Image 1 (cartoon, rainbow, N blue to C red):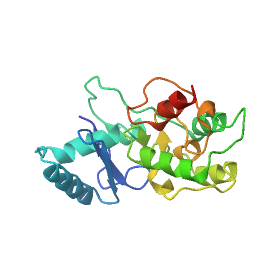
Image 2 (image 1 turned 90 degrees about the vertical axis):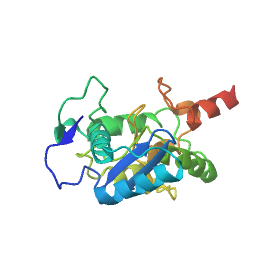
Image 3 (image 1 turned 180 degrees about the vertical axis):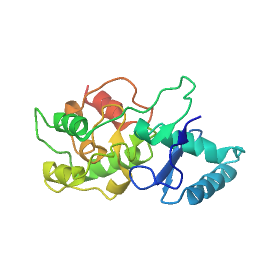
Image 4 (image 1 turned 45 degrees about the vertical axis):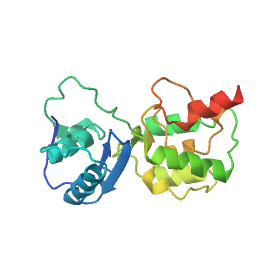
Length: 193
């Protein structure tokens, strides 16, 4: 399992986060011990076993979703999250509007944001060098927001900012493999056909 290089340093994004795979439910908190309590309660309520090594599992999960330099250890052959820079994020996000700078209606963006906020491919705190990115995205979107923007990070599938992706026309979004079953994009594209 992967471990933090430095203890008592909050991960990039200033929060600890974890997704319970069995229920596909995400949690985040500014204090890891509080996050662990939230996850434990969720597991108990859903009649799922609470692993004895929950703290280590959360640490490993976070390490797989932040830049590699934050952690160390054996990754046991499992994939690690991609490391991104402000340049790759901006490029992926700009591609959403490269051909047509058309925005979906607010109600559609809000619905998409609610799906993305709970998605296991929503990577929070992945770009530690992305200072100024939220204000850049706000300008790109002409100040459009959703109520869930604080719960949206990067889309692991294409590396774009989810705060922008939820406003892009589905036909403009790249369609690489790997979308989770509950993703809005494949459903919307199927409805168009």
